[in-house]
Amino acid sequence: EGTKKEAEGEQVLVHHVKPSDTIQGLSLLYGVSVQRIKEVNGIYSSTIVQYSSLLIPTSEDAVCVKRKRKPAMTGRRKQLEDLMAMDNAAVEDSLQTALYRKMCALGGGSLQQAKAYLSLHDGDLDEALKAWKEDFDWEEAGG
View 1 (cartoon, rainbow, N blue to C red):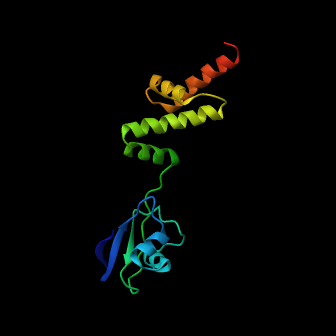
View 2 (tube, rainbow, N blue to C red):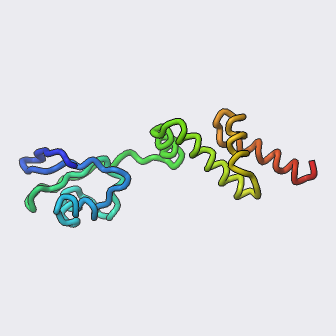
View 3 (cartoon, helix red, strand yellow):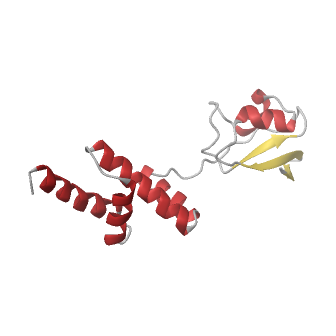
């Protein structure tokens, strides 16, 4: 999994962190204690998703280094990056599901309606929800 590298004269492996990785999992994968991975990388918590890569020591004498965190992402920016990484069908399904959940939270709607409103509003979730809400309120008022 990791690529070998020399850090300050010591052999280490560079592990590129994936969203599913845990420090405990890396410990088992590489046969290195959780505490040693934390020491070498300057980690104080059990969470590692904020790092793009970690140094995995190949010996107990590996040098400690200060790790840089990934730039923080806002919730919306992270959602957009995740969506851009998906293929178009997955993006449509994700948007439809998100709209459907919002519609249900407001009192109604169906997955087919979510698909139709997204189609009418070129995939713009906020505009589709706004239009659906206006129609829903009109129907509720006896329209």
